[in-house]
Image 1 (cartoon, rainbow, N blue to C red):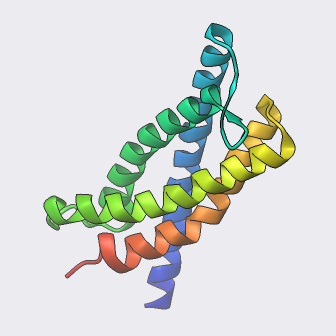
Image 2: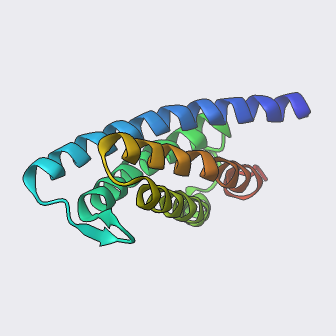
Length: 145
């Protein structure tokens, strides 16, 4: 039982790692595009509108990937009711991303905003939100009946 749970956590971390790469790649693309198209004015606790928009877009794309991979691969819960999983996942992921986003904004407001610091802020948010996301997914969202 413990080995199976350790394996699930390892797969979860792999899926999360690839999700984080997708998140960071998406964030950097949109952050770069937005910074080249518009002014980078303070918007939310010292973070710019461009940072906030790029972060939210990256979160949405990574959520879709993460849900699909965790449902089908990590927790092998594809035969469970998706109608129950989606709202549970949404709640767990919302709490996880709220923590992630809060940490990111806090870090960017402390370090100052540039591309390097924005990535440090995002990475910090990801690291802090991992346990929330795993425990919520394992114990509730994708729990096999």
